[in-house]
Image (cartoon, rainbow, N blue to C red; front, side, top):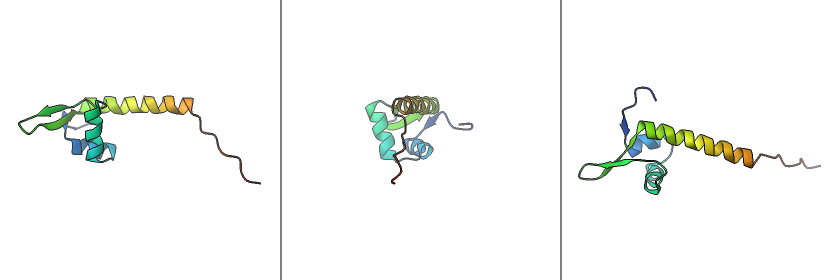
Length: 78
């Protein structure tokens, strides 16, 4: 992501992943997406490099899933 700041808000991450902030928060709280808490109000930030690594992991997991669960078209009705 050229020109991206080092740290992203959960809303920024949600925009990149085209999902909700609540889903990103769940990914962070489960530990699936590494993040840090900063400031007195404990705002979450995700490092852009961590987001890229997460995306790459998801691509790898998807490839593994597709390899072990091949798509088979149903027979056409007669």
